[in-house]
Image (cartoon, rainbow, N blue to C red; front, side, top):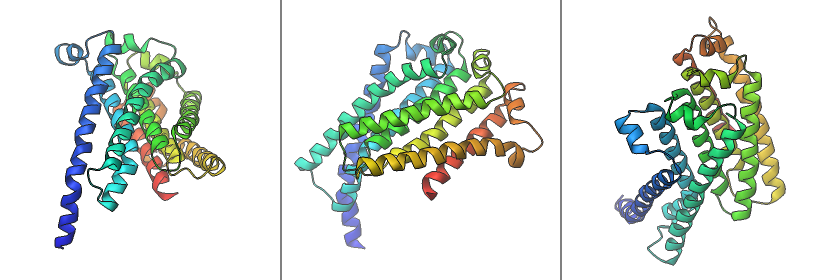
Length: 295
């Protein structure tokens, strides 16, 4: 028992370094956002009480920390097992986590531009969130940030690969995210763009929840140690295809099993029912989590 306490105390200071590093990463992410944003974020959130900007920023912060945790996965495992001291190897791990997190911040901001042009391309999201205070648009962006953060986290976690493998699996995962989002729009009975543009928060929440669900699936598809391109690509295709199909089936089953007395699409689009939108999101995310742990 005493030895166990000693081991725990030995790892505690080294863990605190990563806690501090995570806070530094959040500060850098906020500064980067301030630089590239044409409006003052603090004024929008505090003075104008713009909930849409706050929701978007919250998703961005979560995405950044998910990337940080993905980069932290390997060093954290080594610390917990080997009890590394403050040596050169430990310093290299801290630097690696820091650099991967910086790259992740840049990637999140670049992907935001790309995803806005590929997914919600029929209106100006920036205008909707800032001037229109459109929470539905912000909720969709929230899901996009979390999904992208999960994707980057899965791509950089694990051992055996390098920057080139992380970039390759990130690209494949990003393609899966975009295809799923377009498929989601194609299979809904309403026009997602016009609904979100008309301040339908429920539609934005449902889309954001589905993006998080496919983000979890994509994380599973790209996560793990790199053991070669053949096995890596095969695993990605298996988990990606199964997850894609599972999420679609679960969306169909919501009406049949969980809410048999209502039409989910009608409730979300026509009635703007936030409760139904949250339930749809919860079911899709839960299904993705089951897939992540069970397969």
